[in-house]
Length: 138
Image (cartoon, rainbow, N blue to C red; front, side):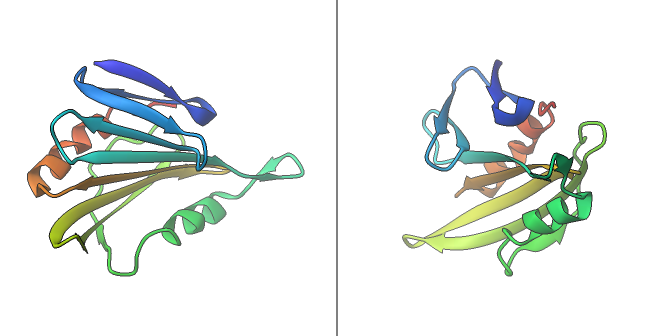
């Protein structure tokens, strides 16, 4: 496993054959295995006003607003780092005549949000990738 340090003191571990990139333009970390169309996109956020962290409800609502209206809330069977709550959704989208499965996970607490999305044309591969989310640490 390779461990990556992400912005805002987060970390995640991926299998050795995966690639990891940081896209500076949008602050997004992108991970993907070789020989697959699976992609994991992770964006960490922090929010404070006058040095005080934004309330947890603000961070939760910020995350929910990024989720497409067509996505459905799903049960969360992921461990959240101490002090964090997790909300998870799933969706399907059509891209270039292909069905793409998407799982969204948001980890949030006062002043912090980690937004994760898993994209793949193979639904089982998308579901199996949830195991990688179990390695997320703060």
